[in-house]
Image 1 (cartoon, one colour):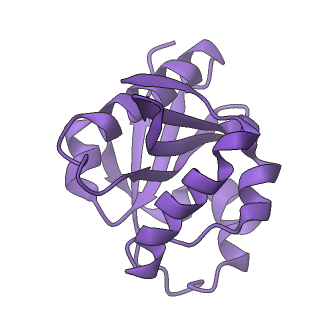
Image 2 (cartoon, rainbow, N blue to C red):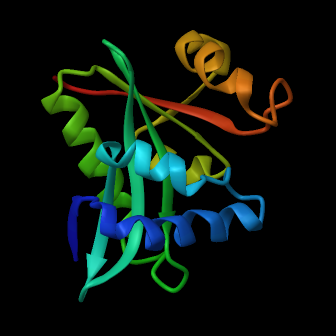
Length: 152
């Protein structure tokens, strides 16, 4: 398995991965335009030339970044791909000297295994007032906010 920065050629596979989960209500949908616009935030996991996972590290502020749109292709979900992507993003945050990352998730157990703790969404005003306010689930978001401090 290779984890690498995403390219524009990966967008269709990324879109399909993320929106397959969105169709079941497990994550928010992402339009292609968003994937193209934020392509520099994204990485992909690739096995034998096939995109089997994706996610992004989105910088929110000088001391905060979000891991978002984390998705692993069905049939590959127990092979450590999600874990590898999260580790990739944590390493990237450390290289950028960002001391804290968070994720909004319906899978808190996965993130707990990765060293994340549950926090109140309102403790992240940059996220709530910049992006959450425009979400169709706002103000009744049922995602769980998980946060991890990074050794920098």
